[in-house]
Length: 357
Image (cartoon, rainbow, N blue to C red; front, top):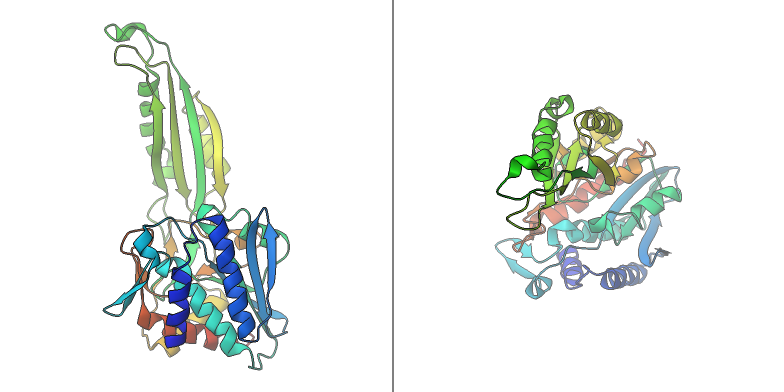
């Protein structure tokens, strides 16, 4: 456990919320692996570094995907603190605990006969800002596998599905008038709010699955109006919709276009993750979690947000979120549970050794 904890402490000290320091973190990881006798490849796309390292030479490939970049934090968060079985610091849970565990997995598997298995470590530097330069690029270049584990903090549970993402703006036009005579104008903000409430009542908004109660609909931004005494003639509203794995974003947009004449501009879209719980790799992982983690039950759930798993899903590669325990990621009190680091590492090692069977 101490080796993993020591490595995690070093990783937390990198303020990898910037591209420059995230790249430095990749260099550090490559140096650490090199000292352990493991060679790695550093790939650069648009200035963002990625690391790829393999153990085993088999045909069955297990990908261990992690990101070293973090969201911004306060200066003191980059000095790790250990208290009551937890290690505190920016990125401790999301997701340097998983990265440190993966690196120790690679070290411990280095001299193991994995048979027909290849374990590939992928570390990236831009997951927190969308993954377009790293995971998207890697998968497009063919860095895929038979199964992918993304070490997001899941409390040793399995996030096997994830909602898709649909972000867009709607521009509304109205007619200006004096604020004392609003009936002579057409209020663009009022039009926007009317459409917002209609969206909440559309068929897609009321759908559910066995895993998700509903899609997530967030009215994220609104911009309109200039002064108190004028009817606003323009309004821009922005939505962040996380749609269900069985839904289609084009169908959602078609439903929205039926209720508004506003101009819709797409900002960001991303596919959902559609794994089935019956997937044999997921079932095998559940058994190893129970066996190694000494658990009678394994939590299996859907994620409302998205991770780099979505880039593998585009190529029909089953990819899940499975990581150590922690809490308050992106918050001031972010932490990882120290005991879970070793448990997680041992589960991944056991799963890797039996991946081909």
